[in-house]
Length: 156
Image 1 (cartoon, rainbow, N blue to C red):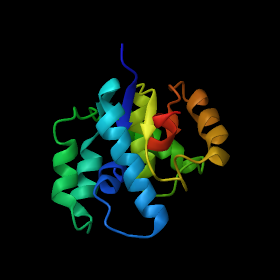
Image 2 (cartoon, rainbow, N blue to C red; image 1 turned 90 degrees about the vertical axis):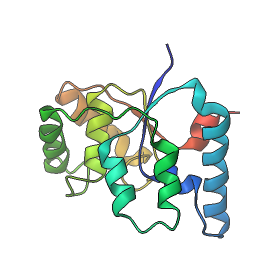
Image 3 (tube, rainbow, N blue to C red; image 1 turned 135 degrees about the vertical axis):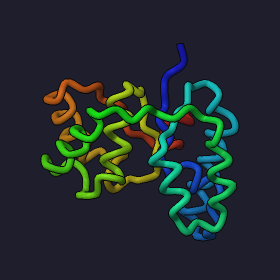
């Protein structure tokens, strides 16, 4: 069985990144390497929240980014997800935005994804926050996905 990966908004965005600073170019290249060469080794999913963020964003290649993930299954939005989002915000694990990072983490946790794939290193793929996230998820009886970047899943 392939590991399950929740694909968050920054992944399709960085696949089509146009900024030319070295760090942005590197993230784009790592994203493309993972997606094109390693992504088929995983069971990928995303959510309507990801599609909404892409649709409502101002990314110059948002149509291409949406197409990139359009064939992925969408994580079902169950009523428990709202309560999980509220708990993340209340415990200050995620910013007070119920449609943002807290929602992505809740969906990945609720659907027992092995990985939440993101370039958001402030609120999600942040080693300094992972212990707090793990404690809250355990307290809520939730699965704890690994919060990783494409570079981490490239290996080698």
